[in-house]
Length: 160
Image (cartoon, rainbow, N blue to C red; front, side, top):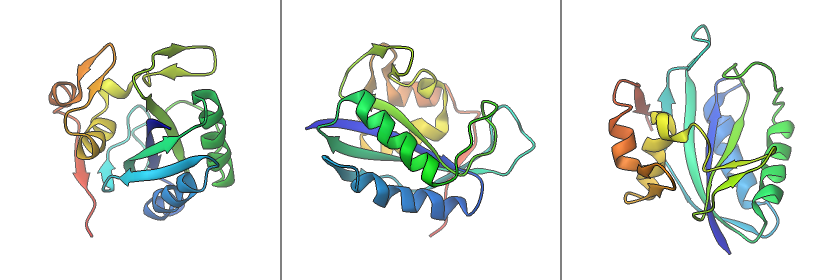
């Protein structure tokens, strides 16, 4: 089994429900098990600012799927949630990003690991650090230092 981290986000159609349901769906992926889940966090949209706040989280999973196979499963979950791919950073029902897969570095037309923008997004780093306080991003450094560089981005734990 390999340890992977999945970033999760939603700002349409009941975002907290979308993300919470996705935790269960990750656990149902064949040859995959949900190990830990972060708290839910609210964050401001990046890019297209005229849209609702996002609810974000990170899941730690053990999987025997290859990274590309896991990505396919994540995209199938997104599709079941009505995800439509349009403009980058547009509103979405559910976004699942494969952030890390062990310490692998992958650059293919379909998949980039670590996720190419995770090091500059507080809404990814804060829940990731909740699950793995000492984690380091391959090629980027300690996640705690990267989060400090994102201090201007507002991310707050959801109530409850």
